[in-house]
Length: 583
Image (cartoon, rainbow, N blue to C red; front, side, top):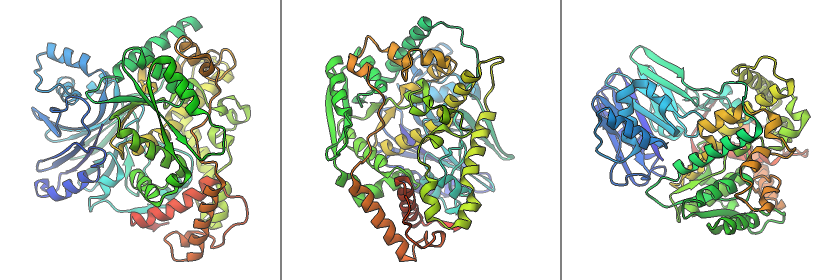
């Protein structure tokens, strides 16, 4: 896992722009604390920050072979198989890294090589007179780009692009709508002019322009297997996926919540490796979240070495932590307590390990969220997670000026985004209406909801220099389970019935029967009081960057925590990033 940055410009000599390219690259030192490098040519400049995972002494980047130069972030888990095939075709390798495998695969097969990759990755290849940007199928690793008059800027994070004077720090109406909405639209980035390369896409940059191409998407198909075969196939896929993702030349652990997803992965990992596992516990919480109890139970059952990472509410409210989260994310966020908790968890895990396996995306793959089982949410005509919970608009409409909220049209935007997402999906002729809708809901979860989780996990972990791998995003597993009928995924009426059956011989009964619990959030009322006090001060100040957009009065009505967090963070972000409002 690393950070990449670059600049292609057909109208200037980039060999004279070393300082700018270095500045772009240096913004991501935390993503790659072990090494850095830049490569310059007249019309292309590539930068790289390295977090050493495989072949610690080799694999330095940018890496060149023949006419091609690569800057690469992520992991390709089938690199050993590809290396063997390429060796058979006459390639000779100078390193043991997956980086060189990616580069030589491009030289052998051209752009079609992306179909052979299994992993999470984002990379750029300069091939003499054109640039190729590639992002993994599920969008686990981020990649942003900014078209210019004569080329493009790109980076793993917005901050890398913003370090170039050609990139404006402007927030317009479209960007604000994306910030305040809970709709996640692939390709959108908040800063005006900036884009995010959608998952499963490539981007070619030539003198005559740019070309976006989708190389992978989920396809609806009939599922031919019975329940027993399906359980066996999922088990085989998970075993192979976990085995591939245990490869590292540095200490590796699992993030263990005691839930079904992370527990299954930990159990599979422990069958072949000496596993360390970590969970988070907020020690001063009044609630009854028992994640740490079940995590210890799982660790004892499978023989993993286990440790709890402890937080307090005061820790998560510390201004230094809030500032670090904002800098890591590059954007204001609605769930500040969860991001702060993850930031601190990853920071402390990084003191013990360099790579971690996470159960993220298990709920999207196997249907674990409560809204999968709420008919009013399923049939709501919008994203089910929007309908299922208290709307963030409930607070924003009390804080922001009415004419601005009307202009933004957040509810309409979310419904339009929902409909646009479903227009991407093919259908199966004659399928039962409920099965068809549940496939749609699953698609929304995998292509929209999961993107928010991937962004959060990537930014918070990479701010600590920790690589987090997500086995449930293996595209073979996702493709297979996507077409498993809902009646089979839910065959005994419990959430994630299929995954419970897959892991029944791996886990203790208490964990197999445990209902899903959300990631622990702060339940202390003092947290909300502090947020309200900060918001009141912001409103009274009248001269803050956000002041022109607010009603100017502290509302007495109900304010959701996401509305409080979003508003406060938005103001902090406008100041910290020197963003200009153009609405």
